[in-house]
Length: 368
Image (cartoon, rainbow, N blue to C red; front, side, top):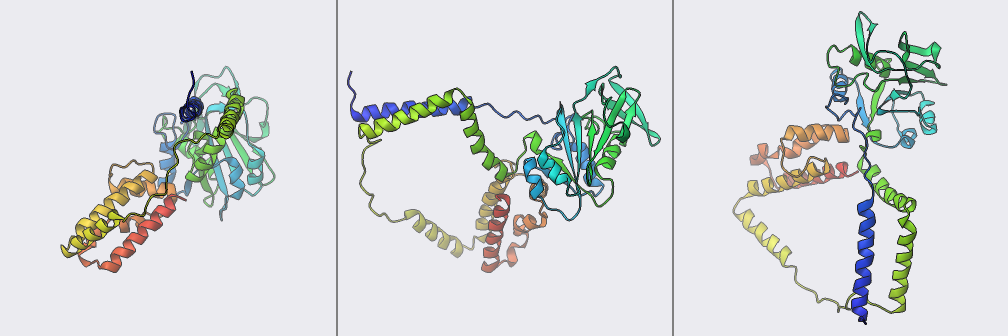
């Protein structure tokens, strides 16, 4: 059976596209555990402790970049980074962490893998006229005997490693201050003392290890992950061969992927003319409130989508809170634009233009 050049090109193109889609659909998802995340409200999460620290007035932030970026982070005060591994990690800290620690910062690791012992799973350890609840049989029984912070008869539960300027603190349980222990608050207070030995320390929670990434990191790693996946799969050589074969066929057979088209003639922009005419009608009808409300709903929907809140319009207090947490900016910046209708009667054209410019600035902050 003979095929025309056009039909052959379509067949080759469809095969190539189907193959590429097949690779992407087979790409495994990155199933990061949410256990130990400050966004997690389940019993193994740390949303309760995060709120507890915020209510105390502690400067607490969420770190959403890889550890290699820690060295570039700047702060006027020393920082304690809290990492909560819900699946027990055997590793401690990396060389990049060491460089950051040498600048006078601290690292607290909860869920460090240690050996199981004969200790009961649930243990109450006396601490400051109260008891800390520990739920694990794992203990550190060999190292750091001189740096034990919390222990029982079976070994160390919390211990530290001294470095040149600061220390790294380890815990054999990832649930030291999880949501499962809201009362009494001695577990929360104990962890607060570990991460903030003095009031001048900032506290950061590592959310990157739980799969939460800021927009810049997400964009950078998406392309990198796809390429690395292709390199590590047995289909990678096949993908290269199919790509080369497709290029050879296109060049050798002089195949056009579609018919050639002449340049389109210049057309009048009817949409622009319609918008300008509609604007004149609304201005004459003094429908400023309708215009501003319509624009505000569209801009609010766009802002919510950028903050990960969806496009359905939500209560403004939810937007204020998400704005503060994700951008570290004051909610007053968006209160001014979301509540403009309160002063609509006193607005002039200059105020409306300034309002639109503030929206541009807000979107620029979210997309950084």
